[in-house]
Amino acid sequence: MIEALEPIEARWRTELTQLDVAVDDVPDVQVEGEDGVVEDGNVPLARLLPAGTDNRARIVLYRRPLEARAKDGADLSDLVHDVLVEQIANYLGLDPDVVDEG
Image 1 (cartoon, rainbow, N blue to C red):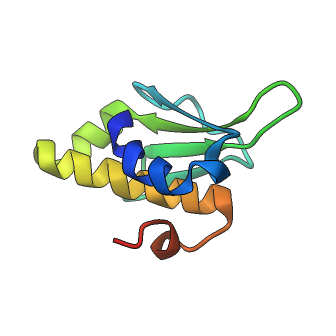
Image 2: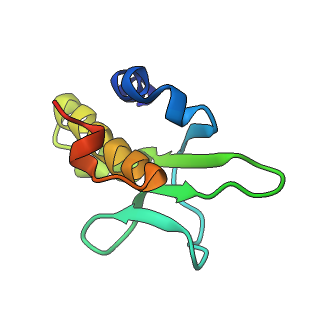
């Protein structure tokens, strides 16, 4: 899943130096104020955790919900890419089309 970050990071490397990306199996209970990507209004696919005094900003991808929504490996790759683009756009304060021009 993290390999989906490589083309985005190649373009936005400087802007992403203070951002970590992690993968968890499933989300914990949602904390109010956290920003996540939710499909079908159910389980989050990812969450952007803002930087705090003791931690850097972090995007957490949720492996099992992503896999459950994908039809096959190619669909999973596309879904992970789209979720990362959306979360990185949110982190940078940009439109997703600006983050992923092609």
